Image 1: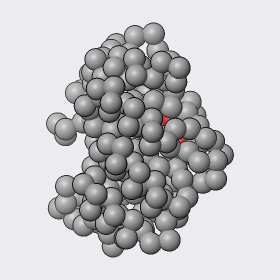
Image 2 (image 1 turned 180 degrees about the vertical axis):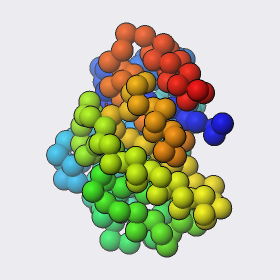
Image 3 (image 1 turned 30 degrees about the vertical axis):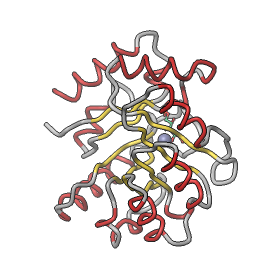
Image 4 (image 1 turned 90 degrees about the vertical axis):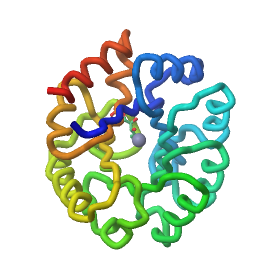
Length: 221
Ligand code: DX5
Ligand code: ZN
């Protein structure tokens, strides 16, 4: 069985009690904290920045923080999030004029680097920078909001990305983001994902541990 990771998106957490929410979801069995950064420019929504990431580290969060940049441009935010304690930093290739350089910047600052692909985008931008990728993240909804429905065409793209990664022989995680639930996580894993972002499916539930337990049971089937 692949080393599956469950990464709750704090976009759906209660921001008024964020530290407690992150503690609770990690205690409930989550592996990573998925941190959605939106700038009301690249996407039509506005969320949280590096100060909040730093505050979570100061609060005592030790788990990997998986920073998903939905901002344009990216390089200043890369520097600030690396300083703020990010583990992964991923960005959308169309938001950087120099994708290879931005990936190198992330890795040079000691973080793991990834590219994010919108539902309608092909994987071309990953092809010549595979050696600089620690993660490929496929969006299975249009970025900007939690609580949307999984776009089924992403399953074919996952298979394509899985083949690209396996053929390369490189150690690159394949993450999926958007509309992941306990009911579709198994099919998504079968298509090739090994890391799963889930926002509303976890934070809208009364019992985070129960949802994560069911998700893991589905992955183990
Ligand atoms: C959307 C974000 C997602 C979102 C997922 O732009 O990147 O991480 O929070 O939320 P759900 O799991 O509710 O689709
Ligand atoms: Zn995200």
